[in-house]
Length: 364
Ligand SMILES: *Cc1c(COP(=O)(O)O)cnc(C)c1O
Image (cartoon, rainbow, N blue to C red; front, side):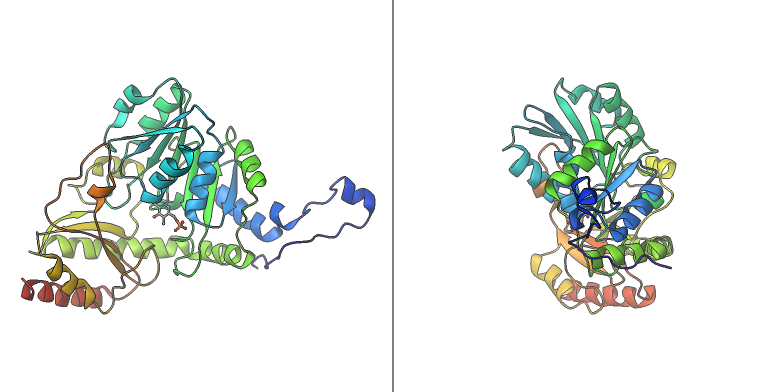
């Protein structure tokens, strides 16, 4: 039933003439195999795109998407709550190539129009944004970019195309870290970039120039993950919401940063544009000492501490979103935690955090 794993590299041609004219559907490992094509085709359909290319990681997908459209002299506008390595790529690589980046308030909405310069090539969105979860008015912003001749690229990893169809909402190019919900198991890395008909040809061409192709086992595992992604997302939403509401009622918590909660910036937009929530959200605690926070986190039994998210096991990380911003400030008094809720029993997760809060209080 599933497409088997076709490995690179060599495809044999029956005759010299066939080889010289590349007369074959598959010509070489980097140019695609039935396995990679199956994932690309399925993702294209799921995303409502014209085509998809793969990358060995989500960050690889981001750099590929940007490099497919920018050239020296261009300007790129990026949301200030962007996934931090995207910012690092813009500052560390695009700058070297003569492309300037500036950042904007994620809640700016249609006023982004005033920031678009004659040489602005890209409007880069991420909604909800990394660590702080503000929801952007993607349709309004994408319409403005289009009118001004800029490409809208969105990092759609939080929602996946199942909860936010990126191209139907106006994005020209959409990125997914397949490392997250497509895998769902924290055991592989994958990036996918889908594009509409206008931008897919240059995306494919850029992919071919780099030939940065993912390994066939990981592609196969993503195809398998796709079959259960909607089920896992539904569970992530209900588990995540149960935890978010429980946390919101705790005296140790100042506020919960979750797009489905009415007080979250952009909540009304989330209700209008999204089909649901995934299992990743943030929490601001009441101010506590670093030692007390460490006492809480170091002793957790079920929550792991580590990067990435969307696996079957719950994770938590402390983060400092303010330190990553340049255009805005993110006001908070207590520490910010980011939770990825997995598939464990919610009562067990609450018990683990309840014991963690007891350690936090005991440590002062
Ligand atoms: C994790 C993540 C990425 C990058 O994915 P990797 O496969 O880890 O490189 C990109 N964007 C967002 C929003 C992410 O959370």
